[in-house]
Length: 446
Image (cartoon, rainbow, N blue to C red):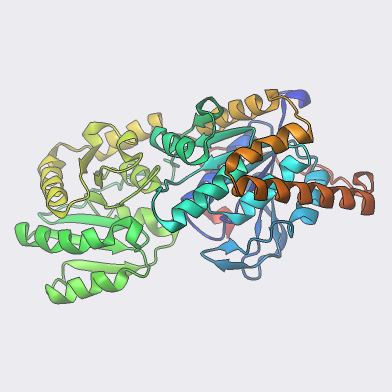
């Protein structure tokens, strides 16, 4: 265990956390648990989920603030600029936080928390989990917001080298301030079946949100062709979303009801049971910074077929994945190649390889280095910090400058109204925490 002077007191902030399930939610939870194991204090702040509001404790003494702030679209809270300032300030003081770590570029909760933390002089780290374009209106808007947030960030983390290039181009952040720390997978949960599915039937599994970005339109063209070429192939599709109706229409049109099984939304605790029923995992994403679903499938011993987009080519060794261009013809060819490779696949050997390549202990140690680097960043006065925002654009720079000035004045008013010395610091509550496999079971979040 490290001494107190080396320990960090970390506040994880994002709109995305349990009980919602997804890649970002899992990343925050597993990273927090392993940082606790390393001797750091970790607190999570997110918005309320239904009746889940207030302070909750999770496995290993992980403390979560479910702030009574309701989401308004896609689990994102309504942007208020300054609405979160009083409660974020209180949490930072009460928990004696030293580092604020925000996750996900389209989390408004994250952007506001990082903005207020820098106003109060805290070190901040940002992790970008997604890729964005540069041409459409939504991406242009998001890139400008990201440029504003990262203008004064201490350090940044991306989950792949492709994601790093994307983030640097979008935000204008110096490359030397951006670290690459990949995601990981809990190999204790995602392990191969004792008995591999036998028989002549080949099962291809798809588990994904059924939205445009995940390439559902590609699946609509690929599945009928694969079924025509290989009568012994069956598809299992798990997930839900606005594009589900297209898959159902395809199934009806080609009379594939007995060969394409639609499971609907799949809880994360049930993902393994779906994966081990198949031989091949199919990912048709049109953009992806780092696909955790591929890691989970490979850890369960499935051969992966995926589109060659974003950071996907960095995820798995060549012998564990077949890549294809996001084109129906090329994907069909890749699936045929994967089918021919199946006799040579050893699920247990694949699982053992994943256990060596990806684990959350390594992710936590690499993130710890980023925190150490953030602490070495020099403290700058208000004028030095404000000058950075003026370079964010002719008009946007002046707007960001004004936003930060107002935020600083509101912080000073809060200091007069409720001095930091009047806010009671909470005692540290820790449990004998372990980051082993048993501790990371999903039933800890029920």
